[in-house]
Length: 314
Image (cartoon, rainbow, N blue to C red; front, side, top):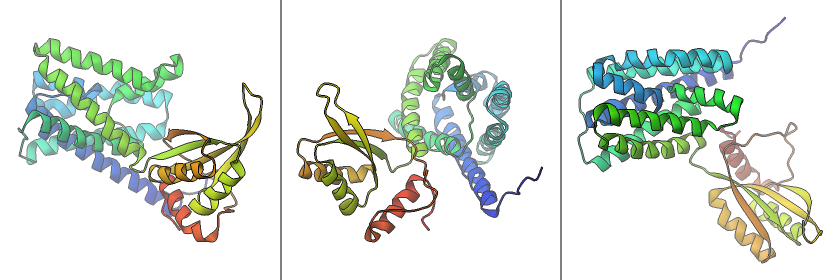
């Protein structure tokens, strides 16, 4: 069977993903070696377990411990998720381990500032590194693999599985070292890591979905399209209590556009019902590229869609 060769764009995309994962691995290793280890803090998951063993056996063994502890999860990734993710995770794990060894041996300058500085700055750098790795298809923590598998079999969310694992990791650190101060600080830092990591994965431009229910849906739809240059979808619904049939408008907008959007809606209908939710990803389903958006707004929408779909505008 003939299999088409990847295009130059595909190769450049793969290279870009691996480069960004390498940058993320270095950032994560930098945070651990410069901020966490000198201040007796640990990360969560498999990395945290490796750091606990490293404290007992010697931190020079941390890169080896990290790879060894991730091996069972790499096998699970191969069995239950797929070869592509396995390759990405293996690449990120090896780069992360190599970065740990490089920074320990060649980068000197441990950070011993105020504990708030350590938690916030170290957590932010670790969150940026971990976020870059995850955003571009990799991973350095096997508990996420375990979470995906458990989620498929039981319905428990990945986040819940990772949280439970981390409670055991931080609790074990407190019991082993007989000092609960560092594990509690590590837990606080982990909250910073999660927040920054989510911002990196989702992107700084928060995307919102807006549902609008109004008796003046036609006027509102025309104003949204022609004044804001936003596309929308018209759905049809019926009131559960009143039984009245109404048109429901569905709009995707950026966070910075919400104030202008709500002002426009209330201008047309002060009694309109508006529901706003966060969106983590948007995919384009149009094949013909046709658009009813006025030409004067076209460039603005191209830029918006490029950010939503993480592509460069043409």
